[in-house]
Length: 414
Image 1 (cartoon, rainbow, N blue to C red):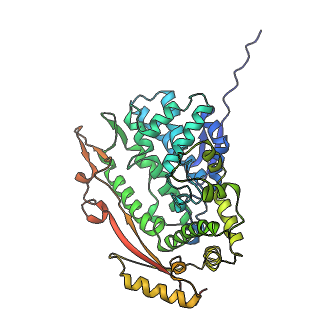
Image 2 (cartoon, helix red, strand yellow; image 1 turned 30 degrees about the vertical axis):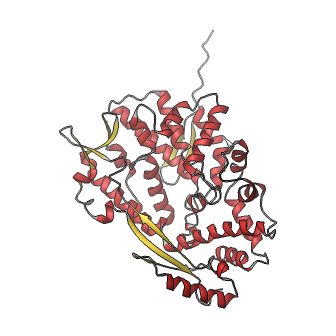
């Protein structure tokens, strides 16, 4: 009787514009990607409101999570080739950890972090969602949770997911550079991964990869100033935060009616000081960019002049002016600009604060006080990157660089 032929495993692939075909392993990783929690990331913008500056930046957290997983696959294969032991269970764990590392992002990613779901960072929410998935998968994510928490005994696995040279950063720099068209962020992730090694349990970069790491840090600095902290994006995201704050205020005045159930829950029902529970989780996984965009469209017709104007400014891209400088702006300038808006739009002083405000931003390319980037020398010694790099001896790179900004309406635009 002839032997039955064993069916080869099904090959699941995504065609990615950055890396080409990304292979998806069968089993747990594939199940997680197909899960509604993960599919929600298709509706979460990777770069907040940056598309108002860079029209191509409409990619999502779904794209980024798959790309970061692909880079971890490459890193694991490379480290195995160099003789470092990584079991199949550990590989699955680190792939799940990087796949789910951003699953806790809310609408427009960082734009509304700690504003809509108050008291909960996206990292904390990611952990809560992973724990929920682990319960429903009978503990299959135990290793992934160890890696995500940074408690796995093989520290280099934790560092592939979260460090100053992790696969998360390698993907988002290259991906965001591609979608924005900002060439300065286009790093050579393949070269960096090829230079990876392990020394005394920690991730390290071989000495010949020093210049690639320098270019990576320079690219990250450029991308933050030119893209992530672009002043127009800052102004737009600041307006979006003020929409949420105004919504809460109008609800107290019983002037707000139209919004989705999940948005209503986090705006008005959940107490930020209360422990995050299963009801919170159920509401959060229903919340995405669509809820916010739909609310903005509805709220343009409100009688409240502050809310309707804020929403129109965002939807019609009639954004305020924004000035940046190294020193804080004097209080007198803030008062003068607010008084002008009060007179022009017949607003109270409190209402004018929604349109004229100050803040600060900071950028730090490399933090020596955090987990270092280790350079593995040819003689076997390990040195911190900053001690080996000529490029990292400036305050601009070791930072942090801090800038102050003021936002105010443009003349004649509204």
